[in-house]
Length: 398
View 1 (cartoon, rainbow, N blue to C red):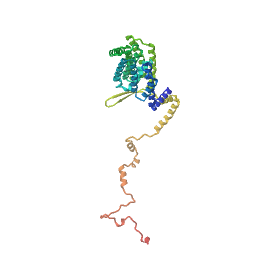
View 2 (cartoon, rainbow, N blue to C red; view 1 turned 90 degrees about the vertical axis):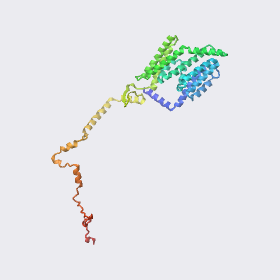
View 3 (cartoon, helix red, strand yellow; view 1 turned 30 degrees about the vertical axis):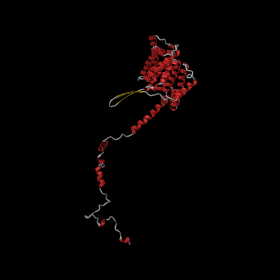
View 4 (cartoon, rainbow, N blue to C red; view 1 turned 120 degrees about the horizontal axis):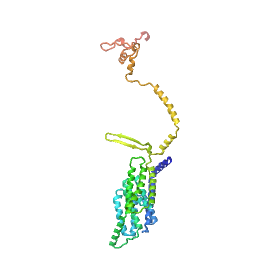
C-alpha cells in the first residue's frame, strides 16, 4: 500500500511539472483515435480518409481546445455524409446544430465527453460511463452522455443501412430526409440506452456525494448493478435484445475503474474520522473530517507500530518520577495575603524589627550624624564660618 501511495505522489508531481506537455500528448492520442475511427468506418470520401489527414488533424487539435476537436470531427463526418447523400448530410447537420445549441454553447469545457461516448460504444464498453462520470463529474454530465449516444446511433445507422438516399429532385430529397429522420427518432434502443446511462449516472453521483463511509465503493457497485438491472428492464419492456455477457463484463470493468479512481482522487482513512462542531452568532456547524492517505503519514504509523512498547514504557516510567519529584520539591508560589499571616505569626522579640514603608521614608529623610546643618542668615547669605573650606594656617602658607 505504501508503494502505491509513493507511486501516486510521484505521478502527481510529474503531472504538475509537465502538465502542459502531458495534456497535449493525450489530446493527440484522442484525436488519432477519433479521426481514425471516422475515416475507417466511413470511406465515402477518399481524400478525407487519408492517413495524413488523420495525423494532421490530430496534431493541430493537440494544441487547440477540445471544442475545436469536436468541430473538426463534426466537419469530417459531414464531408463523408455529403459524399454519400445530401439528405443524410442535411439531417445530420440539423441534429449537430441542435446539440451545439443545447450543450456545447453552455458547456464547452465538457465537449470531450461527446468524443468519448462514441468511442466507448465502438470498443463495446458504454456501460462503464455512468460509473466514471458519476464519480468524477456532476449531474450535468448526463447531457453530453445522451448527446454522444445520439451521435453514435446516427453514425451506426448510416454505416449499417443498405438504403441509399441519392435522389436528384427536390421532392425526393425531402422525402429521403423525412424517412431518415423518422428512422433515427424512432430508434427505441437508442433512447432506452440513453435513459439507462443518464439515470445510472445520477444514481452514482447521488451516492458518491453522501457523507457515508466508503461512499465511492458503494457508488461504483450500485452503478454497475443499476446499469445491468435497468438495461434488463428496458430490454423486456421494449423487446430490445441485449447481450448479457457484455453487460456483465462492463459491470466488472466499471467496478475496477471505480476502485482505481477512488485510490487516485479520494484516498482517505476512515479509521481516523472526526466529528467537529462549531458555532457562531447565527449558525451551528457540524463538520465531518476524514484525513487523506499519504505515504509520509503511512510510514509514520508503521514506524510507531513497529517500535517496541517496552522502550516507550521504560522512558515514560523513568521520566514520570523525576517530574513528580521536581513538582514536589519546587516551592509553591505565595498566595495573596500569605505574607500578612506570616508577619502576624512573628514573636514579640522579633516584631520590633518589622517596619513599614512610612518608617523607611522617615529614616531616609533624617540627616546623618556626620553632616551638620548649614545656618543661613536672614539675607540668605552664608555666615563667614560656613564656607565649607578649612582655614589655612599662615605658617603653612609660608
